[in-house]
Length: 281
Image 1 (cartoon, rainbow, N blue to C red):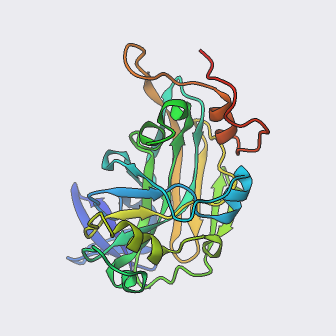
Image 2: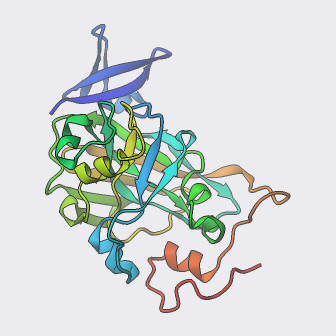
């Protein structure tokens, strides 16, 4: 399966093809995979994510799914890359990983059927849909500040074409230990369905990204932790958590909270009275 990576090479953004343990630029220059300065493998006009899709995650939250998927938006300013630092703002505590498969659009898609969707997909890459649950009390509906903060959408390391999404294993590691272990077969709605569903009313352009959902056991990580998401056939996306240089401003907007909703979501949704107690002030 061909794999394409965008890297910074001699100060320029270069698209490369993987050849074993090397990346080859169009002019023949080669760089070792381990030495490359990676960039997000695509430049989307939008990133759309499904809320819940994996059955293990739904069971973990002790809820039922709606009849059709629901979605949220991650701004393109949240994009990050393989090897990039994930910034947890000072004063925030509940930053969770969510290992996922990202769908990358290859041809403009609008009003297509699930059977046609595959023809509009360029390929797939690995994603980690980080969530800053400190803001969940105010942004649970839109998820904008929860999921849209700078650096919280790493993609990579490369774009893989001709990849069959069926029956693929997905694992997330924190400091080398497996913390999520799932399969694409536990998705309620597959990749083709998600593309066709969004494209009914939203035109998808080449490079656009759809995040397809995470399995159970999303949990908080701390500064210094190394988080890796590995998807069978797509590779391993690696990032390190760091603390941001400044605190969340206190003179505008909602402030980080630690309500029952925040804690139960960050810690797995397995509290009996999830979402009942009011936020701490």
